[in-house]
Structures are given as C-alpha cells and as structure tokens.
Length: 338
Image (cartoon, rainbow, N blue to C red; front, side, top):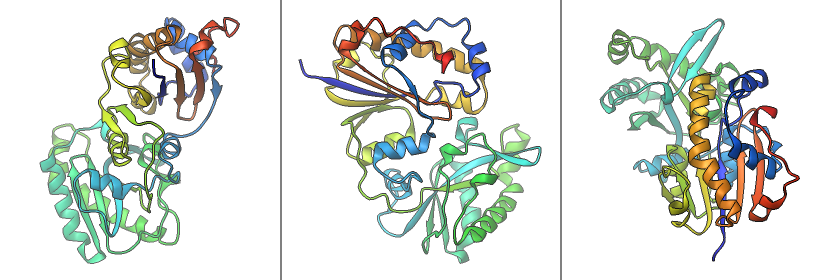
C-alpha cells in the first residue's frame, strides 16, 4: 500500500482570547481533536495566515502574487505591473477604520463593473486601470512599478487599517489615491442603492500582492480547498485542485496518493468577526467530518502522516504518524489549554 501524507491547514481553530476560548469550549465534546493534539504533541506557532500561505508557495511573506491571480482570473497579466485591488467595506469605530472583506457582503458583477468604470474614468491620467475580473476580486494594472509595500488582505480583515496602510517610497501617493478613491465611491449610485437596501457599501479597495513571485511551488501535488485564493495559486503552481469533500472518510482517502493539502477555512471568518456561536458550530462540524475520520485513519494505518497547522495569532502545529496511535502516554489535550 502506497503512503499518504496529509497537510491539514485550519486557520481559526484556536480562538485568540484564552478566557473566551475556555468558555466557548467548556461543554463541547471534541475527543478526536483532543486525541490529535495530544498524540501530535501540538506546540504553539503564532504566524499570520499570509506568511503561512507564502511559506507553502515558496514566496515572500508579502504574497507578491497579483500577477498569478490575475492570470488565473483570465486577465492578460504576463507583462506589466499588477496589484490585487479587492473591494472592501470600511466601518468607523471610535478613532479607527475597520475593514470588512467579501466574507461579509455580496456584490454582483454589474455593481462591480459600474464601480470600476467610475474609477477608471477618474484615474486614467494617473496610469491606473482597474479590472473587475470577479465581482469581489479586482485588480489594478499600473503604468509603472508600485514602489510601495502592502499588507495582504487576509492579515487586515476585521482590523484597523491604520497600521497596514501602504509603506515605502511612494506611500504618500498611494494613501492620497486611496483617499481620493474613497471619496469617489462614497456618493456612487451603486452605493446609494446598496445603502437604501441595507447592504454594506463598497467604500474602498485594498491594494496588495505587488512584486514578482517567480515560479510558485507547493509541497503537495493535490490540493482540496474552497478558498478561492489558494485554489487559484495552487493551480498556478501546477497542483491538482479540487473542492473540499463532505468529510475525510475512507472513500476520499482512496482518491489520492502521495502528498495532499487540505485548507479548511470555515472557522477563520467566525474568529475575525468575533462570532463565537458560529465558531462553536463549525468546530463541532469539523470534529465530526474531519478530525474523527482522520484519527480513525491514523489508527487503522490508512494515513501515513498527518501534519496539522493552525495559522493565526493563536496558532499551533502538530505532526502525527500512524505509529503514534500506540503512544498512550501522550494523553489527549483540549483546545482550551493552548
């Protein structure tokens, strides 16, 4: 029987606040997860999502992947200078502007096209050309290099944007453009209609992804994910990409051999937007559909190795081999103890 090695990425598995985490999990039955954490000798590893993803792809922590993503979305982006310019909603809270991404709103292609048309009309003389390749995935084509440093969108979600605004030689120019763009979008008919309908307005974009990533690489030949960003980048890296199965049962384990990567993204939005109830419910679903079947597969030696990574402020890593199931002295460890 050929070996199977699975890397399981679960951002948001550990709720950042220890007291709230303990309270939220106090009456949750998660025996399979506790077994995996104990047998795998899980250890803290505090790394944001984007550096984790960058490490997987073999690129810089800033994720300079705008060109690859634009190409994956059908744009002719093999030449020139490109940025991701994803539409976002900024909300005032006290003295800060908090960012909400597309996990918190829907947007039609017609709305995106109308917003982008206005931006292109205004910024044409500045050498900026926006593309709404998907309703919530926009790109910015530049006439010259950005010459600034940007924070990946995933690391700004539900946070104040102030510490993450563009930095570097042309930072002031980029901040000026963002202010100008926000004023344009403020009174746009699309946003007026959205506000009247009780929907979040699209009042800014978030630029990121500039630079040259070179050739993308992944340690796994097969990737299972419903995360659009990873799916696009994995395909560009030459991996076979498929949607997440309903559960990690024997039938799914029989579909692949060698190295596989699974990215379970169901918890991250709940953590980012402080939805404890959704986090609890999703954790129970993962226990039933993923952690329990994977623990059983290790015990039955159907799975050779499982490497669990939890990106985030309160992250962890654990590695289990099929033989570790016999190491009874490695007791179960509850998620609340991290």
